[in-house]
Length: 141
Ligand code: 5GP
Ligand code: ZN
Image (tube, rainbow, N blue to C red; front, side, top):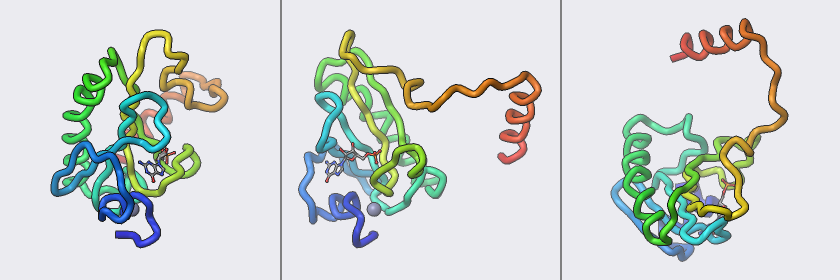
């Protein structure tokens, strides 16, 4: 636990939350400032700042819970869709430095945007530049 982390304090029960799921590794609760009814946050109980920091078994447990929660969250508010995403690092807009996935129910005509809206100015890449990036990603795995 990180003493000054809001989400660690929620996991510890020191800050109340609308808890929707809990197992050995994962905790899920409603967002305090929801973008839609049912907006849910899914977090590892252990304090890690970014997805990149998660041990493999924690990452799997987090995804398993997320996978189960998505239809449950949508169903609870009768939503036909959802955006599911992580702000991963301060430069991406992550405000709470404890890994958390957002499940945001979406409705036809709700005025929201697709996940493409999170990007900055679109880069103008040549085929060669794209190819170099693609092989660099592959080489790092
Ligand atoms: P981020 O921008 O870091 O991806 O999102 C943090 C989210 O946590 C925000 O959507 C915000 O509304 C939510 N949040 C921040 N503090 C609390 C809290 O104390 N309780 C709950 N339930 N949600 C919180
Ligand atoms: Zn934490």
